[in-house]
Length: 239
Image (cartoon, rainbow, N blue to C red):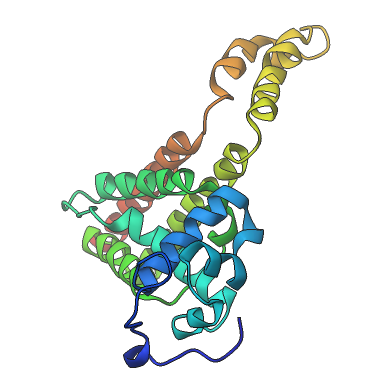
């Protein structure tokens, strides 16, 4: 795509496409998400999107300047999926834990798109609302502004990083995933204590746990550290 997007007021397509649908930003993003999950990053082209929508590829310029503009909209849509039904309860630890798990699950629901978008900053409505909501949870919990930003940054980066990591694993062919899981049993599970005493002592736990994501455990460790930090802040304020 090139730099020739149509202003928002002029975007509405009045006639249906060949498939009988009316183009919209939401429809284009949903179609692009589906194509990425089916075919990978190469699916994000004007020509392929036009075919999938039954529309002239040039009509997509009414909504997006270029494919990277569309990629940012996709990233923002993934954020929206995670935030859509999340409501803070006032228990900041429980609220952040639930949101972190939602972000991780959202990435796994769209693994190829998550890998492509995890590092992007969209500046769009859903991302802005997510930043506002998370900072609000932290500030209401009592974190001073510099600490709130520090915790926000680490929380979001952890969720996005694990989402991308686990999504990359999910996107592997099934045979490859199963072969990697088997390595923990067939290789690590058979190392002798004489040469690898620590692996041998814990091998049954490695076999049991390394097949699943460590994100829930990492999230709990992070939140415990954040709670400890807040306790220190309160102690300093009281002193």
